Image (tube, rainbow, N blue to C red; front, side):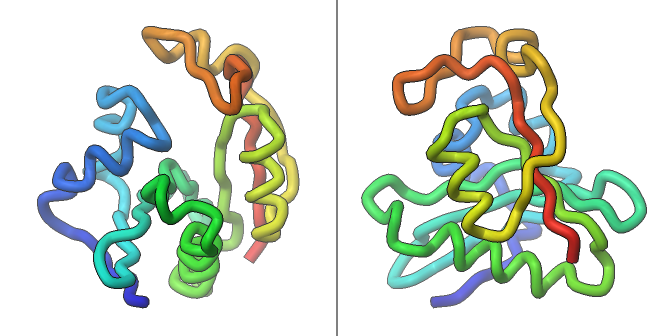
Length: 147
């Protein structure tokens, strides 16, 4: 297993990133200003984008695993890598996600705790209804991990 920092041609991973954030113009808001990482294990398995949101505060804006390889530990491995990679320059790691148990539970298993929520984020910022696990996403829940 290998994780690489992607510094050029980030859009080559767009299909993968769209799994986690299904509106391209939303991805365009953070893709170039963020650091992108790709996890390879006999081919690409997962990718993520992390942005600096202020002194010592970083946010995982997008993390996605190819569907056939989900629930095999790749996402968790990538998050653990990020904790190590940003140690020393990051005091708080944030992640925003839909208010549905599969997502929030995954991040809590990775050591995040619920921080706050943004009401109506998905209905206000996306041009179509977003669903996860059959539930419409309305609020964004932020989770945080102190490093």
